[in-house]
Amino acid sequence: MPAFAVVSILANAQTSPAITSWLQNNTIMGRHYVTGNMTPIQDNVLANVQTVQYSANFAYATTNGIPAYISGPFRDGNPSQATDQNAIFKIPLVPVPNTSGTFTATSGGNIGVFINGVAMFDYRDGVAWNTTTNALCGGPGNPQCPGGMGATQAWNRDAIPAEMAGFDCSKAHPAMGNYHHHQNPSAFSLDQNVVSIVCDSFPADGLYAINSSQHSPLLGFAYDGYPVYGAYGYLNTDGTGGITRMKSSYLLRNITVRTHHADGTDVADGPAVAGTYFLGYFREDYEYIATSPSTPDYLDEHNGRFCVTPEYPNGTYCYFTTVKENWNSAYPYIVGPTYYGVYANRKVTSITETVTTYIPSTSGIEDNNINNLTVSLYPNPASEFVAVQLGSLVKENVLIELYDITGKLMQKSTVKQGSTLTYFDTRTLYAGEYIVRIYTNTEVISKKLSVIK
Image (cartoon, rainbow, N blue to C red; front, side):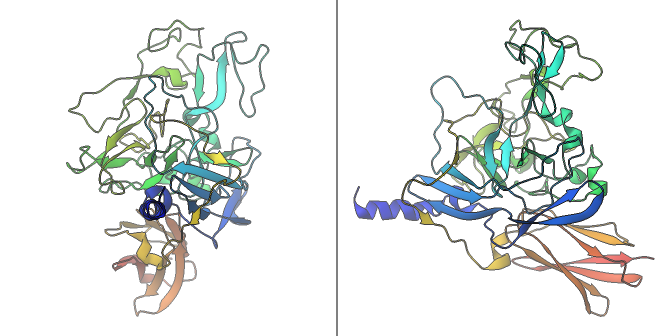
């Protein structure tokens, strides 16, 4: 290839979202809670992504797999904490559709990576129904039954309902130290219907906050190389029609016994639909219902579609992290049960080609691109603490200041890159009115705060 052609390819590569979208950080450390202690513990491990490099065909993100938001505790007996993964992810700049006629199924473990370096898992938790013993087998804390997990693993447990008690406030947990999300990475406390109380005792946030009035941000990349977005997108695939919630085309089946899969395949019987094994406890409780072209906000069997997005104005295939109307997670959650594109294991041990290091802009809050930012203060009035919640994905640290009514600066804090939340301690303040100021790339947003005693 002529030298000028290589230069042209690399110049174009620098604008690829697979290179520019990572949250690079070399100052913010991870933090975690442990049961019984509401004060987060500082870890000596850098959060988010440390280095991004690229060639003509691939982007390489080097990360510890640790988020900037606080992880833990995991109250189902999970003995792990989020630990350094020392990982490199190799993402193709131009992913390739799978045209073989047979799509690759997602599997246990990593199926992708979020832009903060945290692992992305599918619906499963590694536990399935064993028809020999009529019991659940496999997975952490579930010993293998005699004869294994069954010849066909016909009924695979869904991690979202089954492991609810073990998710932290950010809807994640570790597998032998590999901290990961199975679902939309927004905190439980931000859902319109709160299904977990873990945030009450161990408040944290997530990678982003759902905003129903804006196209959701690019959150990561699946192992076929295609981007993964949040819960909301443009109604029409050409980028028109306003903003809408992207909807899963998987519905719960109308069954009371588990004897057949949705396609009619006769399989080893699972437990009847009742009690502990309610409808939705197993992945095979769902069936895919193809929708008509008149409903473009319903996704395909891979939980994605080809469409225009802010990062891809010419269109791309992409996945969406689906949620219900109340923002609770909706199966298949991120990707699945099959990939749209050609799959490869994107976690590598080294870089074996010549690469260029990507240096992001260092202009601070100007990189945030968070115009029309929504900001919430709660509780307000406050007596002990007030949370400042940003309705966006924060790409750089955001300065937030607290002033009294005379204009005196009382406290200041920072929403860290890759998180959405910070707190002010109001216990040392007199009762009265205060102003919270949030500095974005284009404006200073002011919010009134009342402190009571």
